[in-house]
Image (tube, rainbow, N blue to C red; front, side):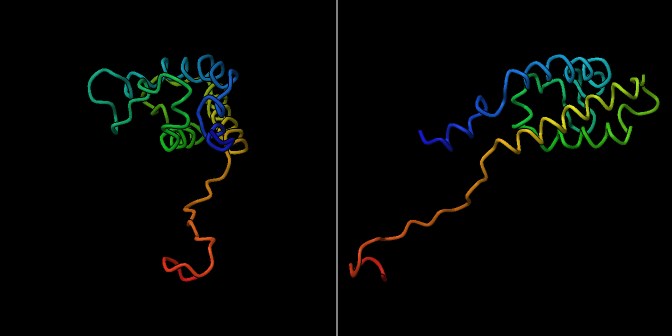
Length: 130
């Protein structure tokens, strides 16, 4: 495998610190304040089942949903006002941890080169226009 292929593997991007932070900061907060509406019981609100994001790998697999979560937490839109509210410092700690982790992931993830077109390197063959 090339170094780029290895770097794109979740194990190379997600660290032990990622797993520890996910399990000690994010999951307990979600379990206390989010799973009742966004969990495995019944139809989750807006089709978002945060309880199904069991491991830190979901940061890569479900990034678009996590970015929505960050926005809702930062704006204090979730949990909704009629539900039990976390301390604002706890809410912002989760949002900050997630944002910092995405910033770190972005730094260590090699850019996608896009489509690479193969070119013939010979001169004058009939199958190319070189």
